[in-house]
Image 1: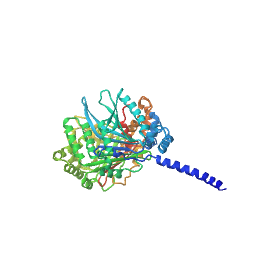
Image 2: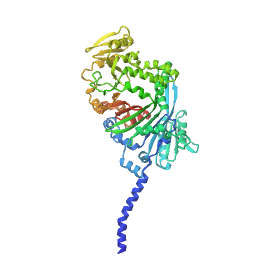
Image 3: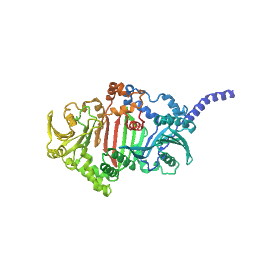
Length: 568
């Protein structure tokens, strides 16, 4: 009898014990989140982290942009071919190497510098980037798969790459090089993490940082404060740009835009001066209602916000309005709402001068005067004194100059400013009920329309004056984006931008068709892209800097993938 009772107890307890053991096994098999910032040197320029690649891909394939464009472009509707296998691989660590890499890995990118060179008359800037993959698995299982993928990639871009292995400070380094030895892919392994870069020095630097031989970004208090302020638990991506990184980005942009040696020197000086106002930048991305929401915070040097706030932040709230001069097919429109434009300009000049060195301070005002030259304004001080608190910039094509539109408080002063750009004897033309002043020497125009002043490329000004009732505000995609904006907040700026080409470029990276989608299915792709909401971003001045929030089809994750992906 006792034996029977004991047997029944064992039968009852055995399933419970088995379930408990299985649950414990699954729990202990879960990958523990690693801090990839421990691989990043404290003096790196930028750091980007993706905590869960599978969740990021799942969010992308469920987004409005992917659902609309994948079919017409010829991409798979599912980026994750078998979600069940991915979940099993993540929960219990079972599956092939590729499934384990996708399901369990964390990814980080460390930018340590840039190489500047010249190819004929063209200036080339190559970022030095290192990819960190914390596989949460054994080298024996995942290293052959990673090396196989890199080998395939190297053959695709180098043709016949040169392959070498060597030891550096106890770590085995694998390298694939182009035939001329100029381009390289370098990989090292440390425990369960793969470190892959386009420069051996950068890879070794990350190895040394993880081993404690160099200071890590993870130990930087400023970085930690940024991380806690911007990042949230369900973020798909987190990025950080250091103060030196901001300067490097500004300098690279200045070099890219400069058209002469004098312009290069002036642009470098301006980027250095502007960089002195910034302490750093942090961003995070998450999926919200089928779109990617990016939130960034630009920290300013101590005292800058207090100096700018009185004249920058308006007492009343920004209103989008009917936008009567923005054509329905405009690429973008930005609306700026300041409390005192004249006072803000003076404060901005004072802030820039006070944070520059002696040479920068002397050059600050001439450089600041040049900021409005692309709009045809030669005297910014007189301009800001003659306009109201609302400013709009209207860009009709992605790469075309913008039209600047403001409230005209002092028409006489604005007419004098227009004459400086258009010449002493501008031609006149009537567009609808408005008169347009046209330059006699080039394609530039200006107009007073109702109580507004417009200046920009003549053809663009004409199109703005012809809008009448059919403005961009009548477009469904624009109205959908407009509803995303909380106008009760003290917004300083709003930008609406067509997201069509950006979204198409991202999805085309995954197309299974050999020819570009626009050559085979242009109408369907265009119609699908037009169904997407406009990308919208808003800017506010916070306690220690600017907060910038945007909603778009694929956001920062899509932009990063598009920028880093090799050409097809």
